[in-house]
Length: 127
Image (tube, rainbow, N blue to C red; front, side, top):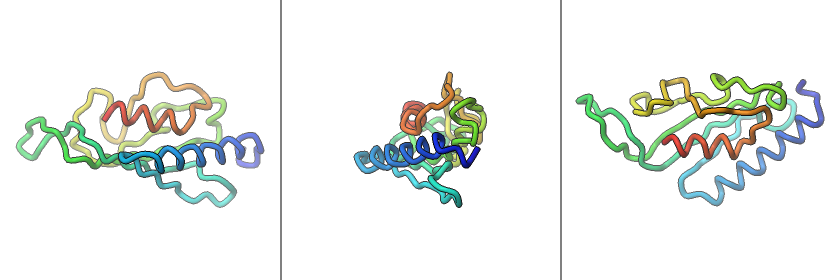
C-alpha cells in the first residue's frame, strides 16, 4: 500500500495542512516522523494549553500546559481507521478525562480518510 500514489498524495497534503495549522497556532507544535518512502505517516503533536490532571496528592487540578500524543496514519487509512491505534496518548499519564486512558484515546467516531487536522482538533477538544 505504501506505493499507492493516491495515498502518497493524501499523506503529502496532510503534512502540508498539519504544518500550516501548527504554524498558525500558539498552542500546537507538530513533528513529522521520517518515513523512508515518502511523506510522513507518523507525527508527534504537542499541545501547550491548560488541561486537567491528577496531582501527586491524587487531587484533580489544572495542569500547566504540556500534553503530547502520537498520531499514526496506517497504510490502510483511506479505507479503515482503527480508533485504538490512530492516536496514542504519550504524556502526561496523570491526565483526567473519561475518553483518555493512556496510552488509549477515544475521539468518538473516526472515519476512513479522516484528515490529520481533524485528528489534531479532536485531541485539542479533549484536552
